[in-house]
Length: 564
Image (cartoon, rainbow, N blue to C red; front, top):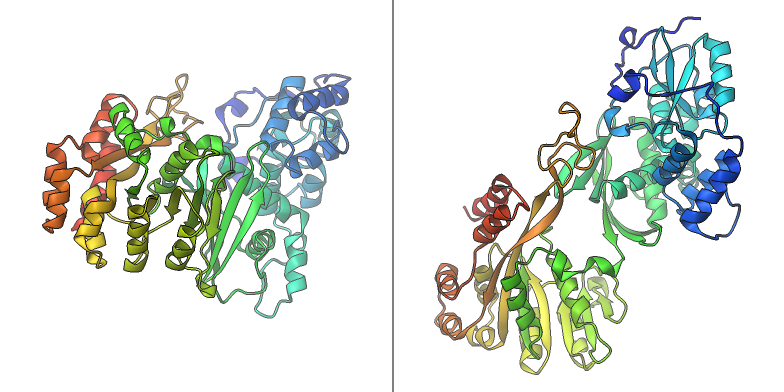
């Protein structure tokens, strides 16, 4: 039986050059006879003693992956180290050909996928090496083709098998109707392929450093996008018949009503991730073709709140430290949504967090949980607002108060009175620059003398993308200019750093505030006293090689546009 070549099919293959160049492992190559024992030993060194079976078989190993005890990619690398099998560069595989002579049941049972298949050989992706020899023999008998193998994650293989060979029965006929029962949706969400697909989405998001996952149903498919370094990238496009199962699975994990598709919902998922678990905030809203689902990934590890890693230049860090070490007053962190305000606040909280200080926060929602802080979640539906919560907090004998956001006059005035009565208050505002925070509070109706007497300083910040340390901004690998950098996915950037505009309130600024000067005049006064604007701070980080001029210009232009 001669299978069709990739060029004869509707779907074209785009495998990595490594596969095409024959770097896969021959199927008849000898694998270590004690492979199972060696895998067990490797797992023990990675995860230590754990409850349950120690691994050493395909099912046991992937039970460890599914339980969150070890990352799936870590498992693949263990296999690679012990067998010499190469690891498939999944990012280079955009499409895989459909072969009509191969059945869904066979690929699913063997958990394998032909990546390249021509007259010379078949290169097959496998998730486990234990049965490589047997599979090579079977492939030769069925298709009269020599098999070579590469390692890939189980979820990667299953995703392509499902999308190419699309077995509707496997997914419970996927599309949910308004009349579907809650139990039917729960059963749909517990289908093994869907469980692994959703786990794969979470795993890939963590590996790629995504801050948000967007699940967006369209008329014909489902678009899954990750926000990486502030920019959305399309990662997957599963078929439409998987949407109901994916949505139900996410809602089930988040403790949401999986049968409700007409109203917005919010939920939360505690996602195991080794030593650093992740808190996932889930939001759904109804849209034309189902529900738009957005998941925000938040690290629970307090080690990420390091002020040295935020991007403050030494003189700015010194000024900010001088402010938050004051015994009382208000410090504001301002900027648009997603500019890193909360992270900066928690960096300060992490420094101030000590046994002799009582720190209370009121947030909507509580994004990060830090030991030693009393954290309150706003619940407006029962009357627990920022204002009412802040009144109660003041009676709790705090030293430091964090207010998630000042949204109205009432909250602003209570915060100011708390500052004037001996408390250090930290909060955020949505304004474009530091001086704009003062104008915004005046617009709320707060008296100028209250602002001038309580405000210590305002820090405005934005996030710009860092130059990738591997490719140095080229987006390509050093050994092959035609191959994109795996670390930054070809963008030339990896990670982000903040640029700051830090305004310390001095006597001249207090006089200007009392005289109701506008934000432009306040900015000029602050610049005379040494304040750097966002653009100037960004230019210094360009000189340090942290980011690019175009990236700073992009971010600052967004601010200009917002003002026009």
